[in-house]
Length: 283
Image (cartoon, rainbow, N blue to C red; front, top):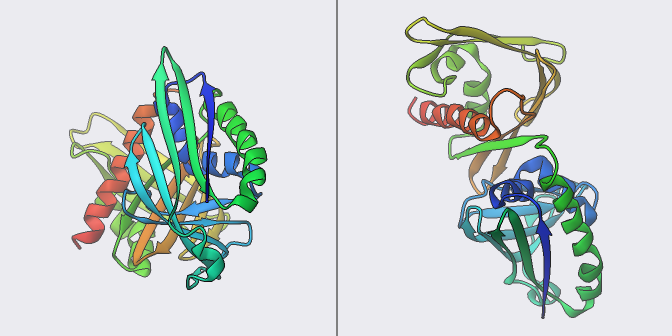
């Protein structure tokens, strides 16, 4: 096993670099340097399992998030291969790299963030990573130094997939969780969950001072797996339902608007998802 280190300076605060690394669409963008279609499934919590997958969907590597210190450190321990979404037994070949570490350290000085990546690699793959990792980090730099194009929020639950799907899509449930704070509520919801179908959710302050309709049109629907919709202002939202290690992971990836700050939008969408999780697990 050989340890290799890569580093790059990025003209962006480390909070933005962090999300450029791990927000779903960003991650898939910079890791395409290794393989088109690269993606990951996880709740992205410390100690959780993570599947690193390729364009084939069900093949890749099973790993563990060993360290997660937001905006500072992310470390993975790679364990074994995956085929058809199933973890394979350790073989003589996988034994040579099982337990290897892939670590990302972020440090910021005067608005410049340095990303340092340290990986354990089998000797025969050292040249490959030496050639491709700098390309991947250059893609990361381009993402982080440009305008934020998408934001990812997610929750994880041990409730079964059918219940998660139903509670997230049925109006009789939506009205009970679709608010970011206790002084707001969702008094009305309509949802025609099919390609070309539309939805409307009325968002209102409980004191009656403010109210608006959140509306969109579905462009893709795969029951129990994924749906995509376009908000009335043209922005795209992708909602995914993944099952991993006994948990359902619900991920929303959305294009931000240009009125409120990125931080406020991320926090608001996450608060609604957290409220959904609370309602789901208590009913």
